[in-house]
Image 1 (spheres, rainbow, N blue to C red):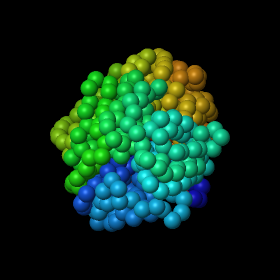
Image 2 (image 1 turned 45 degrees about the horizontal axis):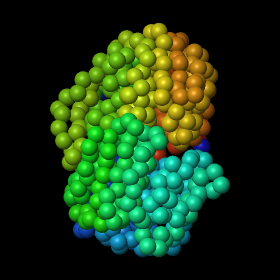
Image 3 (image 1 turned 90 degrees about the vertical axis):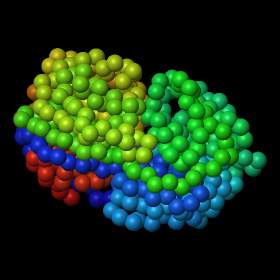
Image 4 (image 1 turned 45 degrees about the vertical axis):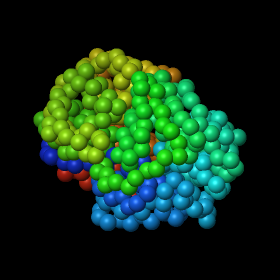
Length: 437
């Protein structure tokens, strides 16, 4: 992949009505469940970013027929729970951490061996958190000596066994991995969460006709059922919409509406946090897309204030925290984020990367073990390293709306993993962005 740098001119406003790409979490899961279902499923609103396309390619390599029927539409002919075929080579997941963790749950129960690999960034991400529960389920799975990819998965022989697993940290990926393996186990597999996490897996299983029980913080399912093909509409990704929400909040004279965004209550932490900071955000035209709630989100300029971010909202906004740090940089007073240690094991160490970048552009930001302390600052502009992380890159592009000088954001090519067309869309809203190879 060629390296691309993006220079974003200082200041400006954003205005208009836009749509953002489909939800990445839902796109991964739609391919997985449609591939394991009986019959043909039709998916609309699919995110055609690199991460979700790598998940689709993985199932194609295991014998699933997946056809692009439109720019964001797929037709998937499922093979059932037991119809996957052994891949002829290693399965390459690129930068798709979600894809690798969820797919591991499926592959751990197959009667064939497989090996999952990824790019340099994914190969640094910890997989021990899924290896441990899968081994408890009798799976034969190993990473390197530090529990990182590549992952080697061998047939479990007599199959996987049902377990109850108490998640040590709130993680939708680990929860989903265990539940996916549990589809193949005799008896009931259950997971208890220490705090709520996104529930797309549970909702989508029900869309595919599979019974899932949720009682308080425990989710359970009985294995060896049948997934039934369905037509599924993927909502627009609130994680992508978050960059526009912050842009319109911090830039003067701004008014933006984002259409058809998923507002699943396990994902709306970013809205709750921005509203606590004083953001002017309203939900309009609330409706359902399949089993997922969606709405049009309107955001107007506002004077933001610093807050102590409530810890219960942090897991519900974990992917959006980098751009919330940008909002905090111009908010009056001090913003403190705690309980966000999960940020250290994302595509980059997002606490360290954001603190470094914020300091480089003149923001008074201090990294802590599990979060950040940010004082209102005048953003000066400058050069920012993204550490090849798409959300770091987009966050610092948005920061230029309040900077005194342009911001040069390095290595922005990875933005396409989650938000293809980001630069074009933000330019249409009024930002001045110029990319060079």
